[in-house]
Amino acid sequence: MVNMTLAVPEELHDIMKQHTEIKWSEIARKAMWEHARKLELMEKLVSESKLTEKDAEEIGHKIKAGLHKRYFG
Image (tube, rainbow, N blue to C red):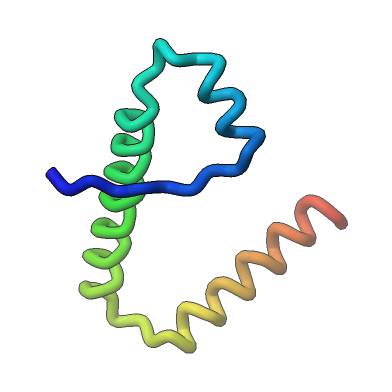
């Protein structure tokens, strides 16, 4: 296994120091795995898609416009 050093904000570090019973490296490892799996799924979906980047942008704009209309009238 490879070691990695992370920088965290001082406020987060203070909280972590108060909870030494927690294996923070395990929390970080699980969060990174979860994110990596989501990236792999996204890459798989995109690789099989026939949409162009322009198509995806147009769909995104329509979704955002619909959500804005729904929540802000």
